[in-house]
View (spheres, one colour):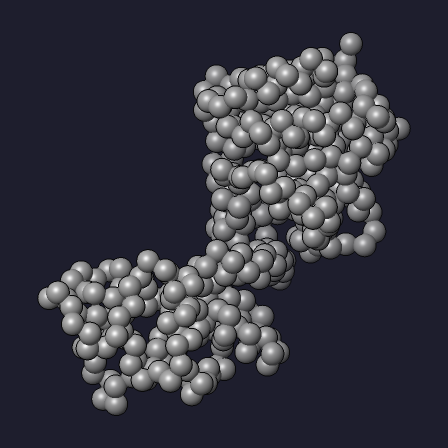
Length: 417
C-alpha cells in the first residue's frame, strides 16, 4: 500500500540524535499513521543500525537505506528523497523535529489541490533545551502561490522577500521531475523551487510545521552541522551563481534571452540585497565563534553598501568587533614568531587587555616587561605607536591595530586602559 507521506532523513554517525528524532516521530501517528520513515545512512560507523532496528519494532514503516558510497550533503539528501514511496515527501534533518498538526494540514491541502507541486512553509529556529522559539525566517505577510504562467513573479518574490526555499511538503512525482545537481552552492534549493513551478504551482505559507533545533538539549553534542559549515557560501559567489541561474531561467521562460539595461541593474541590485541580508547574521556568528577578524571583514561590506548605522551601533561595532579583532591580530602575530617568551604590555594603566587574553587565549603566556627569560624576548604590546612610527618588529601598537581593523570612523578612547 502506498504511504500517504514519506519522512526522509539523512544521517551520518549521529546515532543518539537520530534516536531522539525517531522517537519524536511517533507523534505523527497521533494525527495520522499513514506515513513511512526513510533513513538514508551515509555509511555510518557508529551504532546507527542498532538505533534504527530498535525503532523498527514499534515503527514498521521505517526503512534503513544505506548508501553505496559516502556522498556530499546534497547527494545524501537526494538519496533519501529518491528512496521514498509516499505520494508526498518531506525532508527532516536528523537533529530537528516536525509539528504533526500543521504538517498533516499541508498534506491534506495538496490532496485537495492536485496542481500543487510543493508547499513551502516558514520554520522555527528552536531552543530545544529551553523549549522556546528563537525566531522564524520568512519576511512576507501574506501567503502566495506561483505557477508556470508567472516565472518572473516567482523569481522576483524569492529575491525581494529574501526567501530561503528549504522547508517544504513535496508531491513526490513532481519532485522527481524537478531534481537537479549542482557543482557550486551545495544545495540547489532555488533551482528546485523554480523547476517545481514549471511542473505545477508552488505555494509559500507562513504557518510552520518544522523546528530547526538550533540549540540542542544539553545531553547531545553536534559532531558536525551542515548548515553552519556551508554558511559563508550563502553570502558569496557560490550562492550568487544559484540566484543568477534562477533569474536567467525565469527570463528565458518568459520569452527573453538575457537581461540588459535597467532590468539587468534591477536584477543585480536584488541579488546583492539578497546576499547582503545575511551579512549581519554572519557577523554575529563570527563574533560568537571568537573570529573577530572575520566579523570585521563582513561588517565592512555592510557599512560600504548600507552605511555605518546609528551612533550607538557604531560604538558597539568599535567595542565588540574592532577592539577584539585588534587583540586577535596580536595573538595571530605572536603565533607566527619563534624565539619569543610571551606578550608584555607597556603603557597600560589597567589590566583589561591582559584579562582579555587570559579569558580568550589562556595558553598564550603573559610576561612582565623586562622579565628575565632563557635567551628569549617578549612581544611588546604598547597602547600607542612610537612617535616616529619606527618600532622594532616585535613591538605592536594597539592604536595602530585599531585603525587597521576599523569598520567605521568612531575612535575608541584608550585613556581608560
